[in-house]
Image (cartoon, rainbow, N blue to C red; front, side):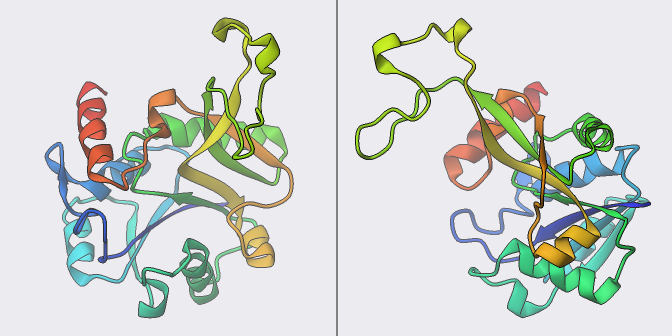
Length: 221
């Protein structure tokens, strides 16, 4: 069984122009997740799926030994393309073993570290579950639009230290088998394991304010 880390990037970006290659603490943004994967002992191969030759050239310049470039089709690199579409495109083209593990890693979560990938993959192996996603625990109180509490009783407001809270998907990475993804056409399948990450990793870089916050956190990290 091999562990394939799949990192999709495309050249178009609306909220932050060319954000995938914009310099973040001295490196192009997509460097940080690629670097974490390169130094994750549980990961065998990294696939950067991009529509851009210039992005590919920048990535090759990092000198990562595990890195391979996959040129994604233009129709799967538009504003409306789903991540699953390029995942399935790659699996159909390369046809890896069904038993291989597939890690979808997102460059918009540059705070993800090598230890996160390694620990999550080990946890997944022991869990016996079908797939895994990363989450952070939040102790915020949630309400729906009808003015009804979702995760607590406002008449018996708990103290923070006594409140279990909820898990929130942080979008850092997902783990599944190749067979499951091909069958279900989704990054997640069946019984799902949760890998908990630190609360500050809840930030995904989508807007300029996210960028500024990650710069500070990345410098501290």
